[in-house]
Image 1 (cartoon, rainbow, N blue to C red):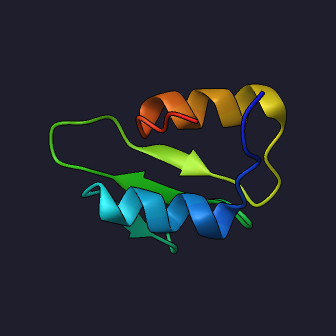
Image 2 (cartoon, helix red, strand yellow):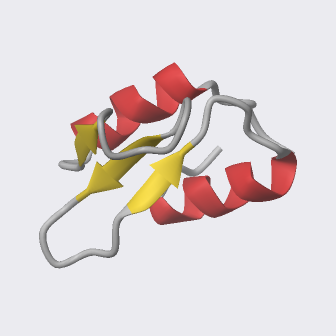
Length: 63
């Protein structure tokens, strides 16, 4: 299944991979990851397994 990541860890990984994090554009506890030429996506505080798999694929995390 792989490692479980928190919102904070995913934000750090996204920033390292060139994504900009906008904490004002997310809804509630979500933050928005944006990158020129890419579709923006939200990173929620509570991450279920299916969403985590999607985020890991989007951020190209292999574990």
